[in-house]
Amino acid sequence: MPLCAQNGAYNGYSPYSVYGVGDLHPAGTAYNASMGGVGIATRNKRFVNTMNPASATARDSLSFMADFGLSGKASLFSQDDLRGSKTLFNINDFVISFPMWRKTAFMVGIQPFSDTGFSMSYVDRITSGEQSIGYTGNRAYSAAGDGGINQFFAGASVLLWNRLSLGAQYNMFFGTISKRSSSTFGDASYRSQMLGDTLQVRAHTAKFGLQYEQPVGASGRFTLGATYRLKAAITGHAIEFSNVSEMDTGSHELKDDKISIGDEMGFGLAYSQGDKWSVEVDYTRSDWTGSNFDAVRGFRNNGTYSFTSSVAQSVRAGLEFTPNRNDIRYFFKRCTYRFGGYMDQSYYQVDGKNITSAGITLGMTLPVFQGYNGITFALDLGQRGFGTAFVKEKYIGFHVGFNIFDIWFRKPQYQ
Image (cartoon, rainbow, N blue to C red; front, side, top):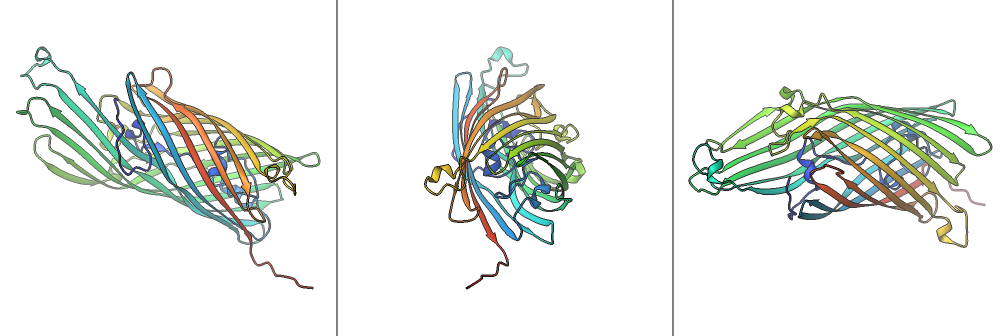
């Protein structure tokens, strides 16, 4: 999978995004990213947590919360003696959350689900002795792609017995992915070959979540969280073109291909000590083996390496600590500091090998004005592709989140 960097408008960039629906975007906001990506068991009234719909009830009464985030990534790619690099910066999320009736709350927003962006090329050095029919000369192969899939979500949750929170969420996936490739022969008498696909993707699904809190001592509490997202059938439209024999185009409905986004289940366990510190560990598993990407042009890779849908797994852990939230002298004692780590296995295999990634995260939230308003920063330092992986990707991800808080329907009082 030789590669090269190329300027262009990309939502994300990685040679591995050639497969399936591209790279799955990390879930959650800058707050989640600063703690290694955990959030299934998170109940924090200061932040909007999009990773579990049951968390919407973790709030002060009558509070309105919003989160607007930006994210970026600087990557260095290497394969043998080849090198490439890319830096991107995009909008990450916009989410609002507010109470509805008594112990119920609502959450709605939009976030990226997957990113596609790649540019690769290589040359096959062919000698006349290797040709069974004639001599075509060297063959130059190139491939490029861009686009992505976003998700709109709207969910609600209810708090029962002040300990158990149940949530449900509607998810709509939508977006466009474009992929194209070409083969050019050194002998000009042989026709160049071009293939291309534009995939206009839509899908609908639901996600369910629960969180249970168990008080421990005067100010400690354990929280158990779980989520499940249903498998989502992909519909939409595919436009194809090629000039293998002569230039021709075609189109068809994606629902006829019976392709889908895998289901996902997740479990999390957290412990917090008042408003001082908390720690959490999450595990997620997503089964894509029935996605049927392997058999559908535009989703499978048409290049050198084979692609097989697989099972994605992730283990994540995070810790946060606030020295003194009410300190009136030292600003940085009121800030919250976070550290985390993760290990991911992708939803596909390349030539029968799993593609894994691992990294550590650092972050902090700076309080702004009154209430729970703040600015969150996160850094993600990691690598994808270990051992026998074809391409190694070292990256630094950076996130900025603006946490907005207000109280609705508060009556001013005067004396």
